[in-house]
Image (cartoon, rainbow, N blue to C red; front, side, top):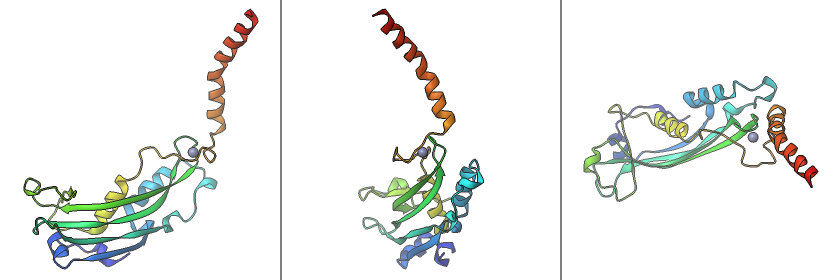
Length: 184
Ligand SMILES: [Zn+2]
């Protein structure tokens, strides 16, 4: 992944030169995200583990500048996308989750002074300097759904245990129905 993503600068420095960073990397470059995915997949049997997910591409672009309305406010605009595997909360199989994030941020600055007429979100900075890779990783982690699930029901197959449970719960209704039919 580009060194520009790993270097620390103040937002004002990046904005002043209008830094543009092309993102061409892989999941493994994002250590925290990789760890989250790895932990999620831990419950899977070894034979079900997706291969090479750490190699899946991370792509996008970041562009630094200043807000048009107030030129002392550094901004970051761009987008980033990656697809990660996750355990489906319904069938416990693997589901591919595309994460696509659009960024339109004001970096640091005094929230009280800024007019939000350009639909920027504020991004708080803990330090004076920023490592773009950290920000990138944070927004992608925030984009992970709380409960990953297959969108397509045909792909989402319930495991045997769950299917049996479902039969158990429908049985009382089946009995009730047959009793009613006997009365007729
Ligand atoms: Zn599923």
